[in-house]
Length: 325
Length: 211
Ligand code: SF4
Ligand code: SF4
Image 1 (spheres, protein in one colour):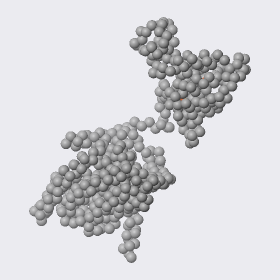
Image 2 (tube, protein in one colour):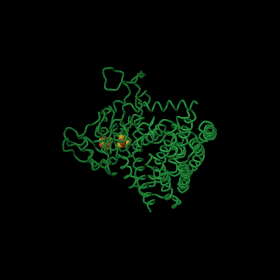
Image 3 (tube, protein in one colour):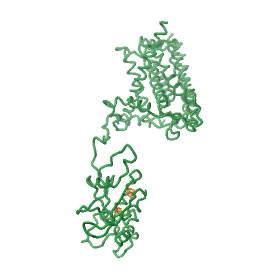
Image 4 (cartoon, protein in one colour):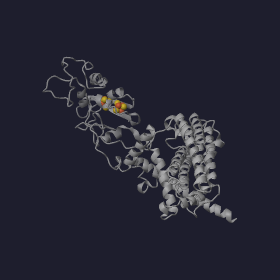
């Protein structure tokens, strides 16, 4: 009973905090994008446009619900809901500090990766149910991309698991507090693993340069083409939450989580700073780079990312066996 | 490798931009100086005696490429001059389809229709964008552009050889050694991209004044 209560409280807290953070993450992205293009960005609704996400929400809530002819209504309705649910569910295991963690699973990393992999299903559902060729192609591309990039994502996470010898996210952080951040130590391979993880993360969350599933110039808006109103909003929010949680996970696995640099003032704030910085860098990349072509995307993954990350796993195993013993 | 280096450069450019001043002009709050040829809405003018200039000659209605000008008129005796002439009963100009080509202004033989230098207020319903006769006469109070039928037609004329007659305010095209004897406007290296009004204006006044 107590566990259930704790779960409910933590769940509500995480959802609230995450949604709020994501809303202002969107604001941050729009501001950043604007500044990168020498524009001002949202500045009308509220001070510095800070209430823009609220205005967006109001707008989306007012929109008409449209079902395309021949759409599979059940799947069409279910997909956005599932996307957001899966995205939020991953956040349950993220340790924001030694205490602030929803569920400290001993297979936390596995939970995150599994739910991230599951995301393919609602995305494909949305693409299929829309009865629209653009949505369908977008869905297919998303599936192909997620499955391909899931491999380096899992392999680079495996590097961390092999190094630390645990799958619990807070266990990984504790190891890093003792031995140094994985991105910096051992010097070299750690950085590479981090960069690969970051790239795979970009691909998993459909961000430029890997955003071919919703390449605007080719596919209108990919799977979201036929969605209107709050269902579109949910898909959109789901993507942002995915990116946000992904940034948090990257911070936990490779950047030492709540540990401050040189253990200075460790705590929740460091985790927040790292997550926001990574989140912002995703958008920095997004507004600077160009989109890959489908074939380039696949080549990059299977010819470079996968072999390199495999090599990293082997290195991690050897290091673990001979150095860390 | 090339892609990687280019990507890093691209990231550098965007990072540098963050520190720059935005170039955005906050439109409704800050209104930049209008360009010389800035033109938006329309107005119908009255002459010095307060008489409506428009006689309902249909020249603008005919030339409008979007076919958005509609009017009806009747002939009456003018209270000022005592002569018979046309008076508008109704005149509408549907701004929703206007392409701001200014042809209607250009062909008007009485300088009756002109354009404004202030933007048309956005509307909430479609009707807000339809300029009725009343709205058009009201608009005459607002700042107008420099162009009217006479001035615009002068720009279309073939360059004159006599230097004393500097009627056209526009610099004649440099390569214009065409003798003035050439009467066909189309043959001249006219600055006009629109050949239509020249002939239209030549024809229309004759038609209207005849009755
Ligand atoms: S500006 Fe051109 S399109 Fe607009 S009313 Fe005049 S003639 Fe028609
Ligand atoms: S061309 Fe001028 S005078 Fe003729 S109908 Fe149009 S506005 Fe009136």
